[in-house]
Image 1: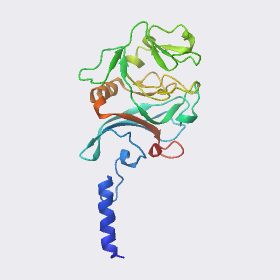
Image 2: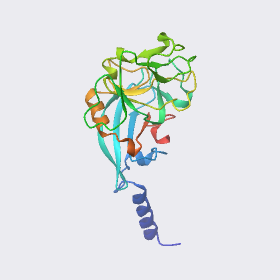
Image 3: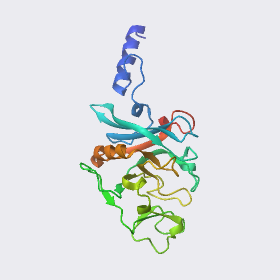
Image 4: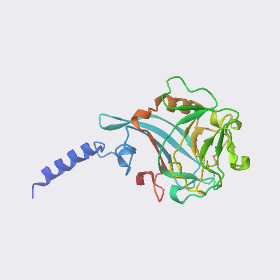
Length: 234
């Protein structure tokens, strides 16, 4: 066995390679997560605890092997806090914790100049179907599908403030499980807590849309600082 000094030096070198901060500090949050999505951009949405309705959204980019903070903003979550995404139930006003893709952006207003993400304009006939009985459950429907009840859907243009700018969060999206939830977005703040989405200021949404690059495979990780929904689990 080598000397303690040599062993310490080897451990320190290994931590630097893995992205640990020097001088005993914590490495950037993406390094402490089980999975950052595999891309070079990441958005983290963090609340202090599962019952919280507010927290912080931070967007990061990988630069020469090190995660660098590109921006941050105050955030709002569901009125009933956060819950593990796989256990979420529709209509509970909870934000699903987990790691998700960001399929595309949309908005009532035009895409901010510099946006490279696919950006879908909201029109009078734009709906998001949340009807569990519909073939287009948890999908944009334009016009609204005949089997998608208006009372079980969001008429997107009716949310003039919230959906001025938005990114679709890929929760329950690729292979939707009916009853788990639909229409989870990163969007502009409304009056208060959300029905399950993550929201930030309009300025923050514009900054995020200008920053996000689909070629860098950005994901969003949602969670808490500890407990069952700790963001480091994802």
